[in-house]
Length: 323
Image (cartoon, rainbow, N blue to C red):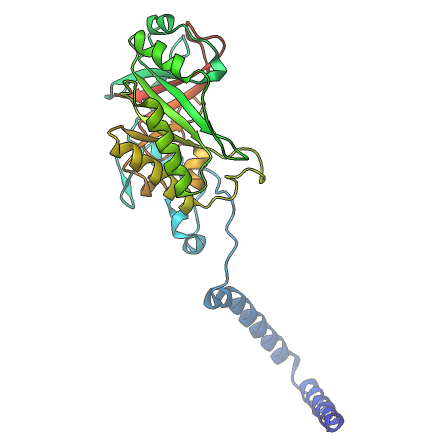
């Protein structure tokens, strides 16, 4: 039975080829063009209809415009990334995107002084601060105070990037005590490697227990970072999961009466955090450039890691804070 059908198909195919040979070449060319157009149209529309995923570039170069078709394929979370960050920053107005405040600083009003400290010539008053950890060793806080430093952000502790243990910074207590005694207001930050809400809450509790006996009047910061390569415990954490961890930490800090803040770089701000979902908290932005290059608003900017401050041996991070 199968062999009989095969013969029949062969005969039909031969007849078809004979008919095609009798068709004028001009008609064959037109038919070929129509076939090509149909294939192109189907290749564009069918993936979307079947719900197949489309590949989106990992990065969108600054200054480029996202084509409408590409934008429609982007996940909703990625739409917080500006198509042209430089243009948006130079609007110099408090615009809002999806309910989120865009940059309100006038970036042309930033000016680096002769001492390497950042000045702001705009209408907002600012403070100059440093952030330190055990890596700076022993600090002469009286000398720091005399050198015009208005506040200090001190690392309280950190979570290990592999086993995930919690550790107190070796200089935390000495630094807080010394800064407060010298009359320098203090905030703290915790270097997080949390990958679950439970771990973020554990970190918040750890911080609150450590600072309860000190007069902490500046922000308490969630400093989550990616460490190393794909072997790091934070490497594959999704944006949504990171935001859940951040909210868990910051909400506990706020409930205890402190001001929560989130530390992030340009990469983390655009590619890991969904910042419009975290606008209830303060933002501490890090980028070592003469001007900040991010379209989102922030409260504090870490602009240098090589600052020179009396009383601190070697380079130190410098920050400017909106008063």
